[in-house]
Length: 143
Length: 118
Image (cartoon, rainbow over all chains, first blue to last red; front, side):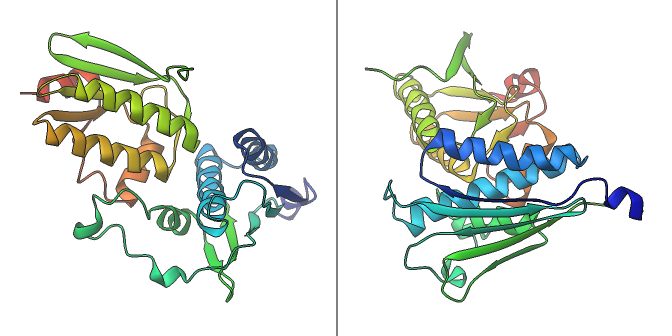
């Protein structure tokens, strides 16, 4: 309904995050709170929190190779029907096609490599820039 | 100084029942502590029978899944058995997406999991 879609103006946030668990947690809570305000179901909050957590972990751990002082840019706009999220690290970038499929039998017992799979499972769009250091994600409200 | 414990352990007969105290098992530092604590339990027990209950857990990251795989391998290396139980449906979906529901023995309740332990 048009009336419902204009209940809340889009919330736009741009934040530079360092690899500090409390700050990362707070940023995720703020994003989820904006969605909660717009009545997204619990499953959506779960999905977005997980995808953003995985994307930020990839940016800090793989993008910045654990370097604690380099900030990651988290930018998002929460609409009533979708959330646009972008995460940029300042590392060398990577080729997402180089990540082996963790669901293959031979990879099932490997300890890592599942973050991107989860991001793609929960997001409508999850695509890396050609440089491989900017991840753009779109979450769509179900139904 | 030792980090604060993030699990509660109950021994019933020969089964070690581990409950997670965190609602969110996301942060790498916490996951490391949990992994180390459970590894110490496994290493102290021959043929360990280990049950991990996720009753309190609302969020779980891929790093936590990695630690569960390490725990599984450690239990197997000591000819033990691992069971998971009380997994919230949303978290169970994470196991399904990653196909780790095929790797782990997952049960609805602790009672079901205990019954399945030989």
